[in-house]
Amino acid sequence: GAGVSQSPSNKVTEKGKDVELRCDPISGHTALYWYRQSLGQGLEFLIYFQGNSAPDKSGLPSDRFSAERTGGSVSTLTIQRTQQEDSAVYLCASSYLAPGTGELFFGEGSRLTVL
Amino acid sequence: AQSVTQLDSQVPVFEEAPVELRCNYSSSVSVYLFWYVQYPNQGLQLLLKYLSGSTLVESINGFEAEFNKSQTSFHLRKPSVHISDTAEYFCAVSDLPSNTGKLIFGQGTTLQVKP
Image (cartoon, rainbow over the protein chains, first blue to last red):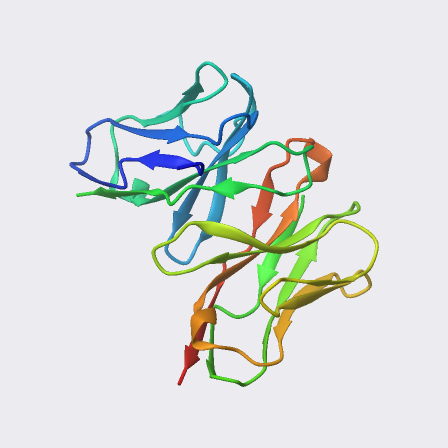
């Protein structure tokens, strides 16, 4: 399809394991965002990419979290040594309009459960 | 720093009744404001947005929101709801000072339309 694609849709892992979440944005969208949606917490910004660079990483909650983007397209969010509090839905969004106009297109998310 | 407060976590309403979902924001600069909707088991979709001009903005499915600068509000309204409007609604403000296009979201309001 033409939308933002995320995988896996569901991931169950054991505490202490590493996980990788993938985002394939809409073709041509230069801006890419990762958010985290926890129950009752709304959407929490994690990181912003413009092309392959990440000028805003201010939302990453700890150094266990990292993300990269290659070829100005696919992005991977990596969580090392997962903890139970990392359980959430991780959402990816992309955009092509000028910053601030808000046309973010979201994927359906990757639900992470840490046992 | 900018922030968004959605005053109601859940709003139950009967079909064909009017509804208002409240949103207040805090910002020291001009803002762009948005409402996103998340239907069950789907990704977030843009419902409507205010960038400039008329303070009353409308969506294609009958929702409207009014930007009130003096009250720093952007409440969402619909005169007559349908069962299909059952969803989670998120109010958001664009973080214009960062020029990243990232959105700061409220905690969400679950609209439950009952027959």
